[in-house]
Image 1 (tube, rainbow, N blue to C red):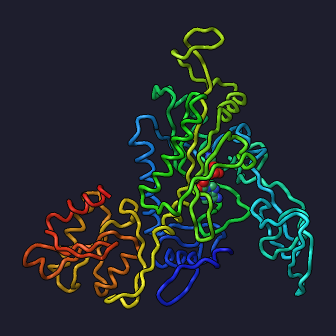
Image 2 (image 1 turned 45 degrees about the horizontal axis):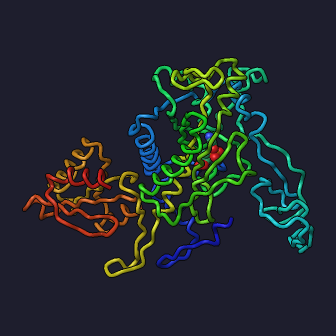
Image 3 (image 1 turned 90 degrees about the vertical axis):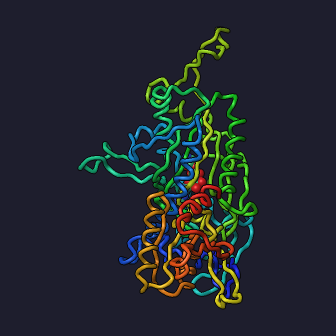
Length: 483
Ligand code: GAP
C-alpha cells in the first residue's frame, strides 16, 4: 500500500502513520477488526468504546448544525431496505457498477478506474514466475499489486448487496441494502414537504448505514462495505441550484474547519465533466490530505431534478411542488407546478472518523519531564469521546476517591461524558487521556481537602491551574461550549 511510504517523525520508532493510527485505534479501543477472534472479516470494523463515542459525536455535530440549528432543514430516519423499484428508478440496478479486472499473473482483483495509470503503449517491467519481464500497457493501467499488463477483460460489477425479503430465495422477492441514504429523501419528498408545509428551498437530512460491495476495500475504515453516511437533499427552484451548490460547498468546508481540521489538509476540488456521476450536473469534492495523499471526504453535487423525475416517471405519482406565486410561463399567470432541483452535501461518517483521527494525531518529541515524548490526539472538545477525566491523586485515600466519584456524577448530570480513573501513577493516567483525546483532566489531591480546589490540566498545552471544585462543572461546560 502507498501509505507505507509516508511517515511522520516519532521519538524512537519510525512507523508509517497509518500503521500508528491503526495501532492506536486498537490499543485505546477506537476501532477493532470485526470478528477478530475468527481471523477477522475483510473490510468490516467494529467501533470500540472510544470509537463509538467519537462517531456519535461527529454525527451529533452534523445533525446539530445541519438540522437543529436551521429553519430550512428537517431530518428523517428511513428504512434501510426499500422497495427494489426505488433502485430501478434511481439507476442503481442498471448503472451502479465498477469496472472489475483480474490480474492474470498474481490473481489480484481490482477496480480498473483505481489502478495505477501508465501511458497506453508504454513498456513496463514486472515480475512473473521469478523472472523480470517486459510488457506493453495497452489499457493505460497496470495491476496495482504486481504491475503486470496481463489482465482479464473489464466486467461491470454491481455494488449493491442483494438479499431476499421473506423465506424464499427467489428473483421475485429480491431486495437491496441501500447503497446511499439519499433515495429515501426523494421518495419521501412530498410526505415531508406536505406534513411540514415546506416551501423550496428546503432540505431533508438523514444519517445512517449504507452498504456497497466494494471490489477494493482500502485504508482501514476509509473504504469499507458497510459504512455510515450523513446526507442532506436540498430542494430548490431549478434556477437557484448553482447558487445553492456554491453555498453548500463553502458551508460544508467551513464545518470541518470549525471542528478544528487543519486548513492546509483540506481542499475543494470541482469534478471534471467525465467524472460526474450519472445524476449530477456539477459536483465538488471536499478532499483531505490522508497519509496516502489527497482523497475524497465528502461530495457536494447538483443532482438536478434527475431523481424526482425518475421516481415520478417510474411510480406514476406526481412529485411536483405547486408554487402559487411563481408565474407559469405557459399561461403568464401566477401558480406553477415544477420539479425542484436538488443540491446534495453527502458526507461519510465513518470516513470522517478516520479523517478526524489522522488530523488530530500528533507525536511530541521528548522533553524535560517527558523523556518518552507523548502521543496526543488533539480532537476538538465537542468531538472528544471523553470530555474530562477525574483522577484522585492517591487511590487508597477514600476521601479523595469519594470526592472524585461525586464530581464524575455531577458531570454526568450535566450530560458531560466524564471518566473516572484511579489506576497507575498520575503521569501515566495523563498519557492515557492524551492518547484518547480527552481535552481536560481534573486531579483531586491533598490540597483539595484544605482549600476546596482541584488541578485542571489542559491536554493541548499541558498547563495546570487550580480551580474551585464546586465550579468545575461550570468551567468545563463553558470551555466545551465556547470551543
Ligand atoms: N448520495 C450520494 C453519494 O452517496 P458518494 O460520493 O458515493 O455519494 C458520499 O458517497 C460519501 O459517502 C463519500 O464522500 C464518502 O465519504 C462516503 N462513502 C462512500 N462510499 C464509502 C465506502 N465504501 N466506505 C466508506 N465511506 C464511503
